[in-house]
Image (cartoon, rainbow, N blue to C red; front, side, top):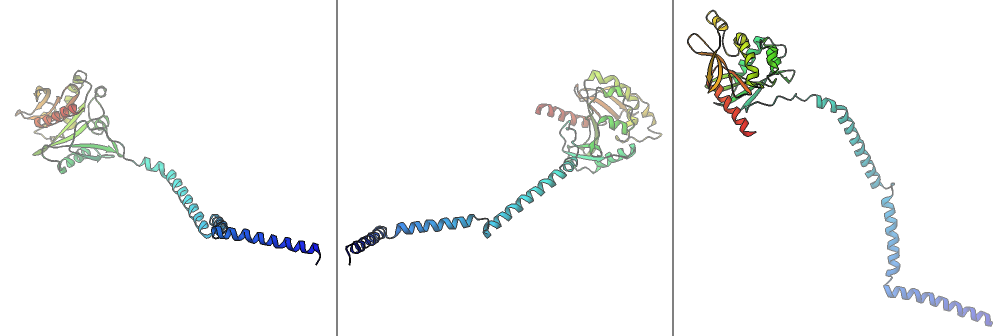
Length: 287
């Protein structure tokens, strides 16, 4: 063997021995941990790539579910926007704020009814009411779900309260009944002042009983005809100024009383007016 061949053989043996020694040192020093860790990291990276891939079954399922939820939400939004107008326009019209506290309220639809039918509707509701003893029921007339104000009420009754008086009376009024063994009807008006309304009420006296007789249980007969032309008289109801219509025996048939400077009560029973006045006073205390 030549000297050159001997040198190459010696060199190759040294290289192989060095590589083996390095591998041996790495393997012995970490128990193969470094190489194993590199392999494990590579495997985890490959697994992560697979998990994030849109081609995986799990990810495709998630994508389909997400798309379905988006489509469902879009459909709900479209339906809501389409029907939103109808939802708001079908609400019941707001009612007037009660002038006094009432224990019970009822609403009577009167669209298309005559004066007599409206009267009978109110009387029927009062008779059927289950309000407690001493309690007050408020009765609101409505036309197509909208509360009827005083001006419309007078028109429906074909009443004779002049338009000039309406300037000083609120359209928000109350028809009610107090349960006092019998259920006694009253009408409560809000006025601007005693001085403003007094003249107009005096003018209405000539036709007031005719306009309201059905509500207060006065039939038009040969025996009662004189009441419709009889004058009201000055009087006092619960220490308040009033105008009173008496029959020939001195019994009260109808009266209106100024309950303070801004309210007027029409009734035919003094204790009914007293209950309404108490509730008016209570309402002012609460405010």
